Each structure stands twice: as structure tokens, then as C-alpha cells.
Image (cartoon, rainbow, N blue to C red; front, side, top):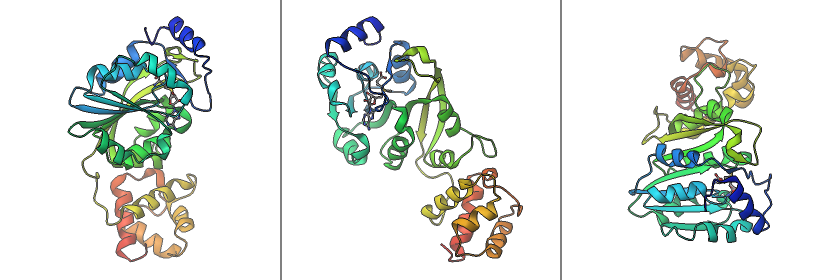
Length: 287
Ligand code: SAM
């Protein structure tokens, strides 16, 4: 059957008594060009092992199986089990796992599933849990790339430049692990049910090493989070709240020593500047 044909999809779901779950972020693709383009632009070929999160009824799974050496798909919704058994019956390079990706050891799963293959992640993500899943995938350091459909505004936030309104601690986090690029937009009418917002497909090309060296990565991320925690405050005031044991005068000296104006806001700092500040704190033994 055509997994993106709205009539056929509705008939399939009705036959199985399936009901969409908003809580599970279920918006299924009904435009055949979208899964095709995701699989192609992700750069999937037969040297790749692809982890898919949330196959739904399997339109992206099918497109990935046509190109990849192996696809492993994790689906939380057990009611999709009989549907996927039917729609994916012909895919002999597919393994389906039913469970919650957030409760899984992704790095262990990847090394168990994709021996000898180049690991990639690909998904039309459930929007209610986009950021936690991205954090989990990137922190696993298990993938060469992560290609995901997300809300367009989330994609824009991840790709934002320092000093712009969209720039956030999550931007810095994602860019620390990967180089992100927006591949294309996907309008609401490509989904059933139709979401309110436009989506975008984002490819995160995972870095082999961090973009700048830091003495203490944990401290670097504490400084970044502090810098964005209270956007209307200066960096000095924001750091004073987050690092209350250091003292405001010492923090002011550290900021100035990094060649930053005393009144600078956290959102103006790029990677290298956050890194320099974290290293100054570490060098003083204040972490
Ligand atoms: N890939 C399908 C498509 O493009 O038509 C479905 C995408 S739909 C946006 C998201 C899918 O993720 C749903 O099938 C949902 O049940 C599944 N899902 C939601 N939370 C999940 C979780 N924690 N772990 C695994 N799958 C999850």
C-alpha cells in the first residue's frame, strides 16, 4: 500500500481501530516526497545503519529501508505493533523495537545493532519531546549525523547566530556537538492530523571533536546556562546568581580579563568567549 496516501492511511487506521494520540506527538506524513527527500538528503546509503525514532505506520522507515544497510526503529505506541507488522512485512533489513527511546541506552543499542555500519539517526520527531531526544542522541556520541524533522522555529533556534533573538543555551549545546543545517521546510498539509505550525528538516553533522578546547566541559555548560538563564540581566548579574560563592568583584575581573565589556549580556557571547570565561573560572580554582 501507499503509506502516504491519505485515503489508504485512513482506511488502514480505521481497520485497526487506531486513534491518534496527541500526547505521543502523532502527526503522520501523508506527502510521499517528504520521506523520500529526508532519506536522500540525510545521505543514507547501504553503508549506513539508521536508528529511527517513532516510525508511526512507517513511511520514513520504508524510505530509509530502501537505501540503508539496516534500519532499527523504536516506537513507543504498542497499538502500532499490528499495523507496522502489516505495512513493514516486506522490509528484511528492518528491526522494530517497541519502547520509550528516553529509557534506552542509545550508545549500547547502536553498537549492538549496527556492527560494521556507519550509524545515523533519522526521525520525524514527536514535537512534545524534541529537545530531550536531541540531547540524548547528541550526548550518546553514537552517530555520524542526526537528521530530524522538528518545528521550524526549533530548527531556527538551533541554527541561530550569537547575539540574535533566537540564540539560546540550546543553540550552544547543539553546536558544541554538531554543525546544524536546515535542509528544507515542510508545510502543515503534509501531515495527518494537520499541525498548526510549519516544520523543517534539520541535519546535524556531528563533530569529531568540540569546536573549542575547554578545561572542564561541565563548567563550560554551567556558564552557558547561567548566561542565558536571565536574558534581561547582564552577564555579570546572571553569573553572580549562578556562581554565588565566587563574589561579584571577582566575576567582574574575570569578565574584563576575557576582553568583554562589564555590561555585556550572555546572549552576545560566542563559543570561544563562553569557553574563555569558563577557563578563567577553572584557572582560578573557582569551579
Ligand atoms: N515517522 C512517522 C511519520 O513520519 O509519519 C510518525 C511520526 S510522529 C510525528 C512521531 C512518532 O513518535 C509517533 O509514532 C509516536 O508514537 C512516536 N513516539 C512518541 N514518543 C516516543 C518515544 N518516547 N519513544 C519512541 N517513539 C515515540
